Length: 499
Image 1 (cartoon, rainbow, N blue to C red):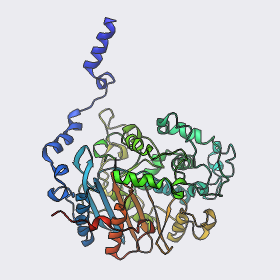
Image 2: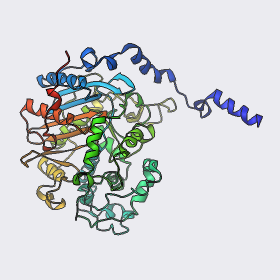
Image 3: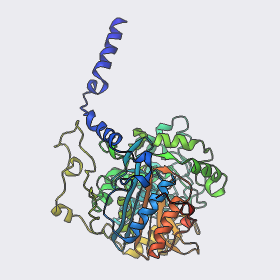
Image 4: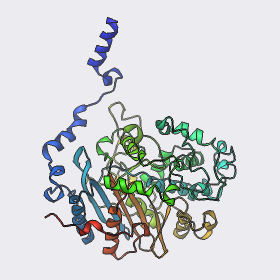
């Protein structure tokens, strides 16, 4: 007994990191937090009294200057905690703004390279990977999934096609819900979830009914991506989008070790929570979540989403960690049919300046390629990357995303979704583009006719009008059509401004 206690004391004295031979410099981890606590009082004084509340980056346009004043006003009204907004017009950056703080208990300022959890915004990137593989001839959108993924063709799933999954009509909308009920953290085990989802049975006939695949979408698409390519999902993400679009360090589905200091932390807007509770009674909401979902689960969802075990999990339906400038650049490329936009603005730190997979103390510099070890690419190596990420004509690519033209028979008529993307319509029913929003407000979309893309990332989850007000303001300033989903009133603009 005494020997056991002595060994326990030795463990405590040495520390867990020493026992498992991990070298960690704790001063480097603690330093930014201590500096912020010592030097910053912006969280207590409010945006109007803090010159640092809006990140000091170049102003690209008149609309950006006006938007920053708008964000300060929203911050004074306590509508915003932390936010990034980025927009492209005609292939050029016109807005690239960050404001607020990293979290309720983290007063460090949000910067342009801060990583925000964006929930279902991730689905738009996952869908893009499937379309990228289709463009490369690795799969067909009207192909049976079982042809690509043989283990999938069991329990009545042999007639499910790739387009059924992209269009949320496969009948597998609740797949794995029961499996994770008793062990919620099981969904962090990628291999187990991929193996198990191949064995489940659909609840409805494929193509019959569009029911939002809130979480199963990620494993379904992920299994298709990995089996069609013969590569890991994250390798395809890097090959298809991260490298050619110069998004290194700001475009993740499941974060690597080494980026923790750039993570925004989520919190729930209390007023928004009340609105969310009211939404649960609507038919549209009920079709988008499992029948067992209760509003009270939202708080535990946010709490778990802030943990590193969840942030590091591969969840292609909901676990994207992006900066707004990386997300807006992604949609700026898609709106042009895959043409890579000119280099992002000169804002610091430059987009793409972080290694995609940072080196930690336990890794050696000669164990990975340049992509992983943080060695900067030269202009020569960057020029070797294709300047167009899709080979098909732009009209065919957009038709595939939206379910138009040759692809109109692959979607459910009059549904909300095309093939993986939310169809963006105006209030008069005109279709203008595609994108995907996430739980609590973060969003990204593009307007095809106007060559416009925008991304907004937030860490104070709200179901109020904030995002609508921001997008409606930007569209109004640029004389662009406002998407139906964001055609809301500007309530906080009516409140007095604190000077």
